[in-house]
Image (cartoon, rainbow, N blue to C red; front, side, top):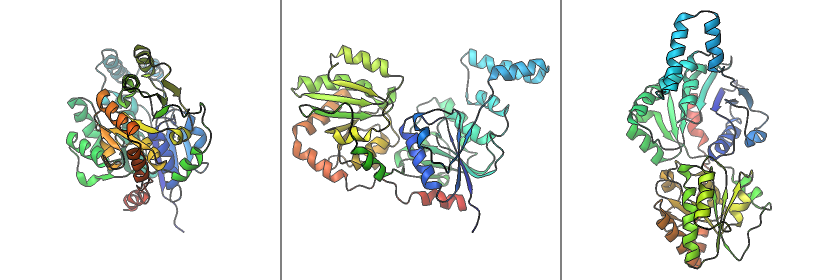
Length: 391
């Protein structure tokens, strides 16, 4: 029997989130064929307890810049001290860039001694992960996984392009994500492949039957959104949409599972629209599936999204779904008007889509039935990676 190939996967941490949950499932599946090592930048996150025992864990403890500079000063490394000052000066004058971070990366050696057959930056849009992959991972093949769209300056694209060109391959979570990337970066299309996220349907179904707290009350139309509370996820529209639904005479409650840096803004908007009793921020929950199973309509109001894991999960649980057009991958997930609605990422459009499903129960039941016929599990996708690995 031939020795298993060694594969490293780079992540910042294992905090709760769609990309990290998908990464865990990918690692579980990949470990049936390969020797898998997870490299974390920080040993933290709610999902650490779910890391399989057969996955090796390496925590990359990069030295703080201050420590590096003190050592250069103590040993009078004049050339390095000059470059240290340039690096720090660019940060202080807000002229920091991908290339500037490269200096810090190159002041470190390999993350670990192992020579891998392949290493993957699973947060492929992150300059930090990408540069650590290129300069500090000893691997025969190097790959980036792109989970969403870029919204940066042309200068940023130009600088990142230099590093992406050095990769052996890139995987994308949807056709829209890949095409959007190729519009911005001068990449060889033959090095790009769409790889639909693997999702463990049995795990979702088994967790969905567990009780949730608080229990959803049947006197309300219960709406649900799951995801990091951040600008791009669109939760800032939820209070205004909720007010519109209440003004239209519908007794709704909108539950939000997740947390993030936009929470304070959403809380302020909840007060502004006087929907404190109707928008419930539940924070991070390790099992969002019981809430998905209990809700009447699942809403993903993102301003941008590569391929929504939560839409797949809600679809597996037979939920009527309202998603937004800027979520490019949604066109690979939902057929508008047949098994869900795809609307503009605006308060008015979300209001109209949700109102239609509240007021047309037969359509809602039709969506719930049709969505369950779709394959959201990503079965067989692992072969795309294994073929590339073994070439």
